[in-house]
Image (cartoon, rainbow, N blue to C red; front, side):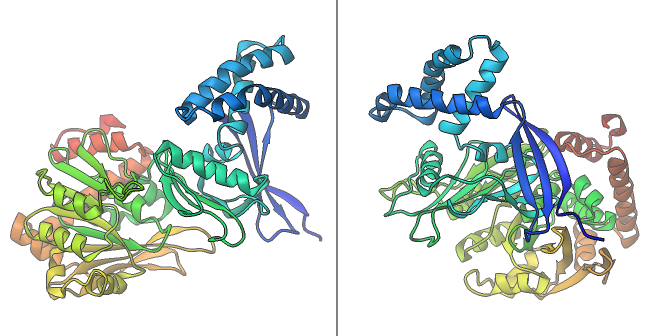
Length: 486
């Protein structure tokens, strides 16, 4: 029996500024990966042709005015465009109602002033990454469920890719030129953008957009997806409650920041939390006393830059109880952070390393190069992993740091069974809780069992909103009823 040449494996609808977009993911026997197709269902091909003619007529009348005014930002250009194109739309669509007119204006703006069909891809909450390799290839996307997919979207030429990069950079005061052909930037929505220009990227100009998660992952999501077990989630919660410092390591796109966000939702509300990031990604519950800080690159003259070390040093003058660091990269940053741990602050951060042993090696070798004796201030190492074959993200290992600076693996993923297995009982963590909190091993186990019950209740009630979780944590710590918050 022959397999189908084209088989729809998934489909759904998006609404982008009243433009209805149908998404279909099609498995094609002739293609190595499925194809992500978008089609606008409420604008006909004839209407698109008329809109193209309107654009040409408008450009011939108005572009010179915009092009010669240095004061025009993208927002001003859009307002100017919208105001002046309305007359042309009324000329060609005299019977259109206000809703249809607004939709047509949005479409024209998107295609001519915005990022074209990339704007549609940016509105799909199922996508994590959008990649433009050049104008010859279709745009690629990374789908939460289906992994890497080719799309039916193509950028018409290299100049358009460069134009998109330029307007993104202009909005935040950056520029990409032949002399400066690499650019890191972000959209106003928080999505991170990297752009390169040819000939640095030899096949053509590129753009890589990592989307900012509209709804951040929570510990409830992680349990339900199998990323962590109830036992691991309860241990992490116990560590958070008792102010033990944690490093989350893993490879690119393994879910380090998502895990950092998930455990941050377990903080008590009566403590001051500072987060330090290069680009704002964390989202914490509203009930928390949280101050987010961001680094800043220097301007073209090399002035005004704020580094991660600047933020780390400054954060200690802001009376924090907890410090969250987007990524630990350099020796100077690590030295200040471990000094903060030794002086009673709880620190949480991410690091690029693939397992517990490698995390210790990264911390104790250049460029970070910390002494092993100093590492004992750290309590837990959480290692995240992504299976490239099926796209599943899992916590690979949980390890505790021993007084010697070495680590002992407590839990490890059995990849064959897709199940977490306990390898060792915590020793150093239990000794710390006994010394500083007066808890016996029996009391700790009882507390863990209680936390597992709360987590199971949250999963059963499908509580995934960070603000609801924040309220539940607040009531839990104050020993108030929380079940009415579901």
